[in-house]
Amino acid sequence: MSSEIVMRPGAAGLLRHRPFLLFLTARIFSSFSYQIAAVAVGWQIYALTGSAFDLGMIGLTQFLPTAGLTFVAGHVADRYERKRVAQICQAIEGCAALFLAAGSFGHWLTVPEIFGAVAVFGAARGFESPAIAALLPGVVPEGQLQRGTALSSSMFQTATIVGPALGGLAYGISPGLPYAMMAGCWLFSCLANGAIALDRPVAAKEPPSFRALFAGVAFVRNNPAILGTISLDLFAVLLGGASALFPIYAKHILHTGPWGVGVMRGALAVGSLSMTAYVTRWPITRRVGMRMFQAVIVFGLATIVFALSRSLWLTLASLVIMGAADVVSVLIRLSLVQLATPDDMRGRVGAVNFLFINASNQLGEFESGVTAALFGAVPAAALGGIGTILVALLWMRLFPSLREMERLE
Image (cartoon, rainbow, N blue to C red; front, side, top):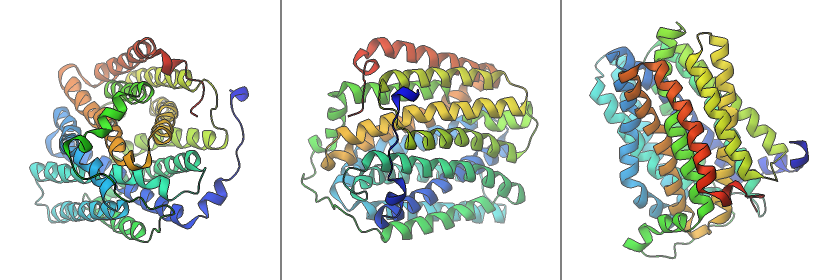
């Protein structure tokens, strides 16, 4: 790939830019909370029920409120001050985390109450994510959007390395401790967002209307490159997302405890962060469409290895490769969406993109849980990897312009 990359200085200067630094701080602590929740909630539900189906229901419970509120959330992000929207969401999430902490410490928390809190997380995140995505272009200097997107992703991946491992260890001490940590992180994130002074504030221009609510859908539908990119991510991760099965693999196949779930999630993040650091310094500048399809196929192959592995080290290696391959698709998609979208529509288009991301991640967890309940964890994960490869090959034929895309610009 050396003939297809170039060195681009300037990341250090961007990190010294106060609005962007505060943005990154808020993002990393909010992401940290979500990653802790992924471990704590999954392990607690499985400890209380022992059901693979219930593990899958965690993803569905998060997804449904997000899907129902997507278009309203996107319009809110374009209509109101984006950092305030994010602050309100983080305050709500912190309160839900405090509820889970109190119930866990007091030993009165029930499974329906956990699912209720998960639904609150899903609804709040449905508003928070498009607001944060639309906020990013306003906190980076002119001409630095691509680099800012990559650095933002790297902070997210840093959180996904530290969060799951620490969350698993904290749960081993007490089930309530990870939730208390989440509440503290969301409070800090809320304060950081409040201190941001935007370089280029965006004034609302379009009054509420049915057409305005669904403008993001029309924009994505009329842009084949964006439609092909985010739908590829949707179906590939929907089939190949085996993270919901981590508690089963940790307990019954690899014979570890809650820390094993955290380490597996951390391995995914190590691969993602490593690849993010690589493309931040040496961005892919040629054949970006083909590189994305190749990365999805590698993701599917690594998923099959994960499914069949009985060794912790081989499992972790396959997860590192999965994380590295996934981030190539993610960075291309995020950069393409940001560069191709007018600023006054970024909230609504970001909401559609987030709906696709949530559908792939959370419905993927639901699909994995249901398939595992029917056929077992190993066949479910292996079939998911095979399905991912088939989707990538099909999308190469359905979206030839995306396959032939040479540069993001």
